[in-house]
Image (tube, rainbow, N blue to C red):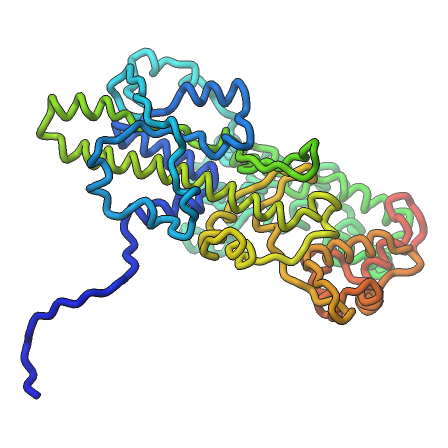
Length: 506
């Protein structure tokens, strides 16, 4: 057979991840904050996208009912050939959804109002530069606070440069994160000079800043109070024994009475182990739930989306039609913008529908948790939800990522409801959720008597009597994950007398 080059045409099927398909997948796994930031960028980039201000005002005035929360997005009617230039079809994004789920809501073809020919956030007027937001101020952070004091405590320019380097190496808790020797080598100065500058920084406010360990941080604060005697220093040098409640060893090392040791521990508890946190740090963003679960008066639970987290955008086709007539050279650009805008609006709408669909199935399968608490949490995995709603398992995984559900029992991440199964000791018995087993272990330890501390083996015996088959190493793993001390440490805590009150040690 001769080896020659030739051309052949073959027909086959392959999954192609187009840019628009990738965008739809990314939208599905975004949190509400990430989604809002993404939509803001699209509003600035695409002149055919605009906020649906009427729907935003209506949502603020009166929350949408459960049946309408998945339909808060509106789309103007595109031209007949608007989807002809898309690199993929809408149905390719969620191919396993039913036809009813993919159908567009009725009554969404009305024209939009357009009062300003500008995209997204619009231009900034001259008056906007002098708005109230431009005059806002903030409190100085820890580094800025220390830099101001450095100008006072250090007069030598060289020492100020060294101090600035050390201040940059202090974390938000107030601890020095670099070694003095490494800093000296990097700055090409003697170690004694760096130590001297560090000592000056440690004398700044807040007391304890610039420490290299917890013991040094507490020692700086006690030194300011003139309470750093040899006994207290010995206690600080053995903080790990204090954490283990090893009273006998501490009494021997500090050479003080039980009453004095109790006073010393009380004094340490009054100190601040993280002095830097009193200054401005990164703002903690509160969790905003994506789904609400409420009790229905007629029984069961109602599931609805949080309309405040759903971007309300629409496509202005009137502006497209007007601009294309007057600027034919920009037709290609505007057509691409129109196609991208239509795709984005449709993807946002489908994302909301998918989240609602998955959340409703989770509530249905975990109804025992919502009715009776964590002890009735069932074992659940992504495959069970995917098979119940007719979607792919990867789609369910993306939906449950970074999404939160507000329920009568608190706010939980959707991943919380997916737990592994613990086998039942009774033959043919129902499996138990790992989260429910952890809750049971915590209840047993919280209710144990000081004279009868439960070991891991004893906890295994009690759980087996309730129908839970579990190994001792699994109990130990769950206990350590919940940061519960061992039986020996708990015995010291509960039987070792309350030292701060001056009680005698055993």
